[in-house]
Image (cartoon, rainbow, N blue to C red; front, side):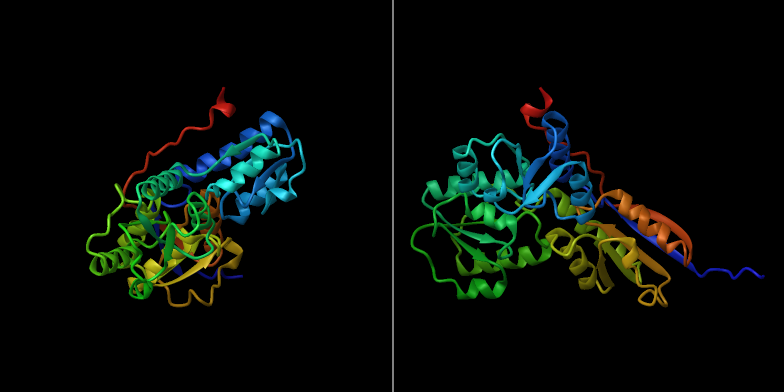
Length: 315
């Protein structure tokens, strides 16, 4: 039987991609909690938005719940990387839980900014996506009515000017470009609005979007590995499309549609901040079943951020 030559496919693999320091830290907190206290360890909300990661931790003894009411007495509890309202900490303390907070330090920074601004008399306009756990957690740091959610430039036009000074903060996993447009609109509508002390969109979100922009002009299509409820992964798809590249979000390599790749000569690949590198390699191996692969990594910036673990787990 004559061997049929496979069509060639160039892969441009974005870097940085995949796990960020906050995700690494959160997953490690769950792993160390299981090692220290034994299973089961309860985790309020998915520790990060990735089914592969969550299923792996579940197999090791993590139990994922949405509310503390689902947690029995006497077991350790971990709060997810997205952050939780103050009321959740209070409820955990009242029930005597041994809890560990895996909130990303960059999200915690936004929490502290919100508290400080409200204490100083500001009304905070929070740029973010309705219902996202990070937004819920941030609003839960301040009294009701102290913050207003802004999702789009159109929302800015509909805002009724609150009494007193204004400031704004942002969710850490937003589109850099969309957020910039909203900020311009806010400054135009409220010239005296107070900006945050530093950029709220996290370094990992910004870097991954920049990496997609760097390869988009050279690609015919792009695949983004990430979960459908992962804000930063969805933004990567949007960034690619905004730069003229058709893009698709997949969770695992098995979801690759070879018909969708028809005519593609150069394919871009990236992964959201909650997606492990093993899923990138899995995707490349899957593509190699239908193509002769030539892969190149295009590094936009080198990341070396590390976040400390809770003392209770490293003592």
